[in-house]
Image (cartoon, rainbow, N blue to C red):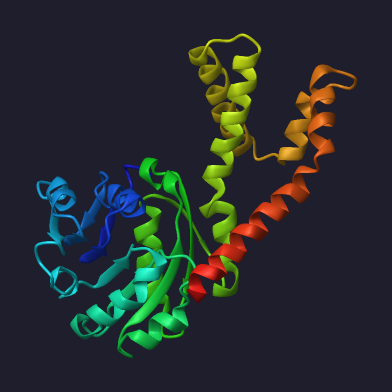
Length: 281
């Protein structure tokens, strides 16, 4: 989000302050974002104490306050469910009676459908599924959102504004959200894996670890910035680097032998299958 942009959000309760919850929280605390109030719950009292001194944030720990989740959602207009997928059903059953009419419940859990969420919550509550990714912590997330059957455009607009504090937002039908998670949700891990591999190749060619890191990280960052700023298709940018009969062409030919598109299709298919297993479990 551009710091010059002013965003006003209602009272938000975040249930779960793991890596994704904290990434979202960083956006809510960014300059230019005004939130009526933020309540955060965590199982650990030690983790909750880390947030206790944050201006505008009220932190609760279920370890010391068994009713922490119900306290946090009481009066909140938006509730972000940021716990593991296996915990979502029990958590929704726990907080349902404490949610006021018109509350918007937003889940970041993979695989838990809006139909499941709606079945566990009062009819006066709307639900939205979301799929952010970890670059949220630096304001560069891509977040997919999908509305439930009781969600109106105003509800979705609030959720969009919330996630725009940490990056870009793409609205998709729920039928596509799990697939989106295998691309943008898991995508940073694919990029880091490629960076690891190219860094090891650089070290193997005699560069120090520090030099290899500078070469590879800088190349990935520069290429990404070029792609975004140029507006060109990545295939066209690749062709411009790949001189006929040159060194890059030889390297691309080796990479093409493993059929990267098919490999990524298999990888994302595996991620999608796991997402469905989590939902069923």
